[in-house]
Length: 415
Image (cartoon, rainbow, N blue to C red; front, side, top):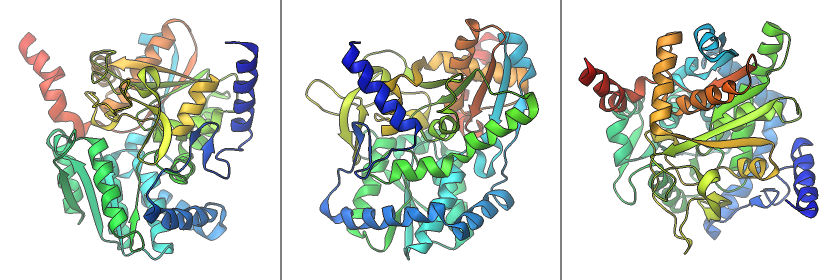
């Protein structure tokens, strides 16, 4: 890296830590922005204006009350004694798996559905991959009395069938997306088509820190409760900040929610772990920071898995929630500046970490979260005695069908 580039990235990081992003154009340095049809410009402007409510005492009181009395916050910070002994580190788990509906997604869903009501929307739509955002949105809509439609890739519906049932029980209409790769990318495509057809009466509850401005900012703000809680809980329990904080990264909502509270704490290493799938080639993984290049998808400019002609590539991950070709623009900036270290974790390594967590802690994490556990374990090997905070973004009940075909099948064959 030459001196000019070092200066540029240092300035970008200074602006990020100082809270100057997103800027007026919805940019995080070179990333972000708004690339949408003209039809969606007005509703996005309305939503951007409504984001002022994130600083409104009345709205925040309502949001906090729902998180506390309905969603179950604050979630626990658990000392992972079994993993600590195995890793030679002091491991703490931020238990988003204990939040209502089983993952961090509920923080964002309840906040956005509250905004939808304030904006006068008649219905809410959402996309989902692993199903957790769909379940969270369906639950939030049921709670607040809003009709809900969730788009989900047909492949994801097969591997996440329990969550499909949960959405339907909560009154949501679940639409199977049969075109494209039949995963999260195709579900986002369909949700955007629906929104374009009725931009005034429909509110699109986007589930990750992606999409056109102001969604990356909105999702970050609603998920930042994770990091704020974890930071204070660890100070109260251990009297210190962690040496490292780790999270899995697909679009990146749980990770940005955790990392944001620690950006200014330069002593805390921030570690993001992507879906390395089964290899480094295009189509074999969903690691857009490790293997992608800058490009535009679903309304924003960020790190994207694409070929030399700019064609977006299909992805692969054993985890439905990470199986997406774009990372949120704020993560792309944090990777560029070096503030967060991102690495890809292979399918088999993530599954092994999931099994280890079950055996050592009596906790079944989501396969998404297992990527963070696997990466944190690797980091611990070269940082003996370190204090490591891991975001357990969700629970693994939803993944039993996949685990039956992988871990449990292997165990059965061995027996």
